[in-house]
Length: 188
Image (tube, rainbow, N blue to C red; front, side, top):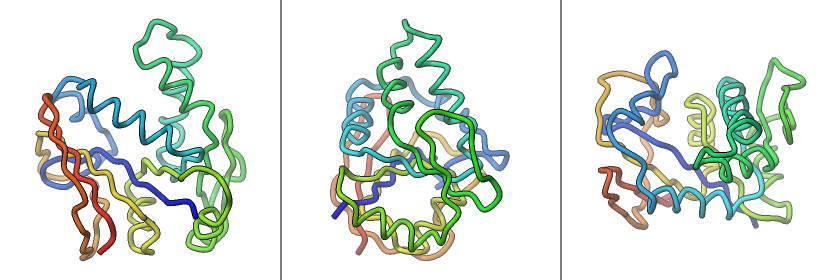
């Protein structure tokens, strides 16, 4: 059975974005750490499907397609190619089609659809966000592994993904030179 993996960057005070959805704080606090980025690549390589909420899709798709298509010298280009070429399922109750490569729009029941995806053959499934979408997955107990990159910055207010009590079991912790810490949690 496939697993649903959550990979997300968070602030020290538990937010994944500012109230307006911006994530500029990720670049303010630290530089890219090659070992940390290698872990991001490993997680992406372990998956063949990305799940996303509609609100984050446009920025995600536009950014990675631009890097893949127009920035051959960008050190993120090979990762961008992976993001563009990986099948993406966007959950939306309002959109029937979303422009971009390798995108399917899903409007069915979230729990039923994710449980069916987990039963299919293939690699694991990865979710990056957005905040409301991830909160729904957490509330429905659909996440099998949590990869929380905690950034050395607090922003005071923002968008959380944990909106109710959730008890998790710490599996591992890795600290990186840039100050980020990766906590891997499993459902308790």
